[in-house]
Amino acid sequence: MPEKSNVTMPGTVEKIIPPVHPSGPEKAQIALEGGEELYREIRIDNSLTNENGDEVRLKKGAEVEITVEADPEATTPASKGKP
Image 1 (tube, rainbow, N blue to C red):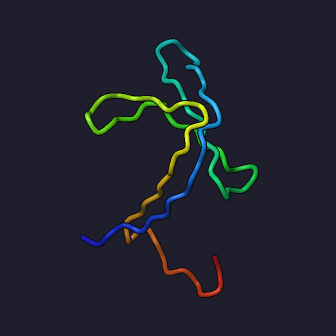
Image 2: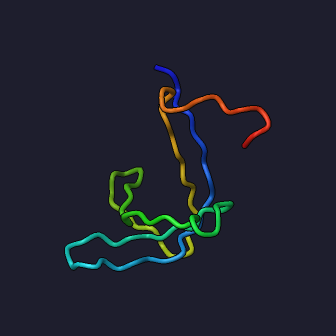
């Protein structure tokens, strides 16, 4: 199977957002370095799994990496000279 295309960007956890509803998930807001001003923040459930299989959470100020992957059939060749 062909490898997926990907890009990895650094980011920083800006804030931890409590759940809106008591049974809802806590969120982590992450600012992506190099992102456009109005679109650089993303929010994810603040629940990760460590190497031992234990659930862990991100801390405010944590340095993270965000990776976007796509299958080959979901991409097209980039035009030369264009980003």
